[in-house]
Length: 66
Image 1 (cartoon, rainbow, N blue to C red):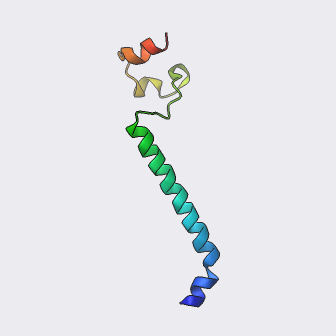
Image 2 (cartoon, rainbow, N blue to C red):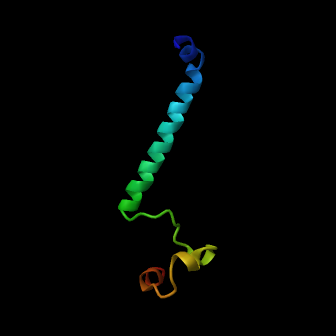
Image 3 (cartoon, helix red, strand yellow):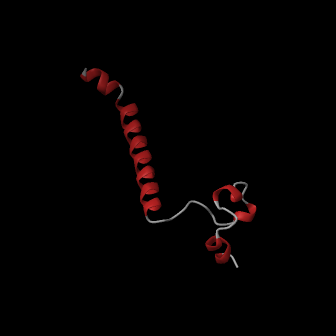
């Protein structure tokens, strides 16, 4: 068992680092969502999904761009 661990030490370390990075990204995204931050750039006129993520009647979005 110890020999297998030694033989695969590089793979184990890299895997742990990658798992740590993914967990960090997920936690950061959750924290940003709870704080009301968005990954949206706010330029809905150039966004292909602009009409589906922000309804046309949403005056808060429309008034902030004027």
